[in-house]
Image: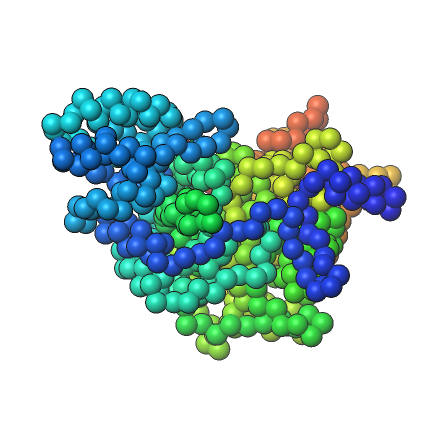
Length: 608
């Protein structure tokens, strides 16, 4: 793309209103075009969260509901002063809904019940469902028909997401959304002067100085999406296949609840929604930073190398230093060759990233980030996966080897901002935009390029005995056995160089007759990523992270100096003549292909 094309696209997207960063020349600060984020008021947020924590845990994604039992006298008072207790508001998409008005604050609340506040949506009255109705006359009719009896009304207050995360435990050994952690959150909201995130560019209000949690504002569309997708997300996270990631089951930052809180404006009362999400951190560990042109960087918000120093991420491209240095552009400058991960949990983490990104793609999500927080590795090294309590652990921990002048890091990582379905309209019209909001499948493939461009798995060796190749335990990474017929998944993107008249014998070989593969071609030379920013070019075949294949041959010796080689036939590569591809053991993970192998035996393969 020429410079003229870039300038033209930039001008078009500014004129047509694509959200982007605009630099104020007087203050040299960046700001968004669009409505300001909502203000955070700890009093009503804390009041609702406190009542919520005392309520029983419900199914993943269940709506929080306040049930009010009206006495006959209260019923009569409401009928006489209907506008004091109800009003009709715009619910979007041309719909209206009935919400509580200010009068509910004067009605006695039942002990222990969730409080009804102005702006909370009426879900039902008696047997009448009014969740999507604006027919006030129907509400009045039901009230009058039951004037001499008690009547139950139900209001929507938010979402219960505590049970979405299965047996996931935090670094203190507690379930991520346990009663204890939630009680700590409520106590902090009540006594802490909120500190807001000033680096994020999402347009949300984010409170960051709470123990174990962040509180973030939620837009209407985001809330509606959560109601739809979170039950299926929770079901997927608790599937048996999630156990194959060793001590990890998900990298998604757990959201425990969403509450709907009224805020007063100059003219009305407006409902705002707030999520309580677990903070990506290692409690009581020593933070670390990496120097980048005089700035000490201790946190990174990553979307993948395609967005580094690119107009594909216009907000970051035109942002001030303190922003871009903590994004992909900063990562590739600090770590131009990427980072090599130590053995502890790294293969399981790669597999979990793959599962999570596939889950988000199926849910049509885009624009999520991998948030990484830097810590010092302890002087006496310990592997988190070896000290875990037997439960899946969160957040994920990636330990790095020394990189240039940078000492080894311990990184706490997790996926944030994963409830987003909006795709830039310029993607369809121009085929290019300055927004990171790409089509979900494309975004997922770009995001997973962090393996291996940003993060490299340690090289491993094989020992062959009786037709089984074993990757021995090394540096806290468990052993795994490979044999012909095993189904495997790719832990990273892989590329192979094809044949040419100059290098045919170096890159491609004809598989031996005793392999039972006919005259299949075997591709043995991979094209590896050497730069964290720029992808290598010149490959003939490629496989993406998460693709499935079958081990079809284990060659005892590829050469005098090179030991056993694993050859995989990938499901996605279909040619007239069979083609198989040599992989390194650290690049693939064996998955069970029959109930007989089961999770228990695979767990022993992975966890050791």
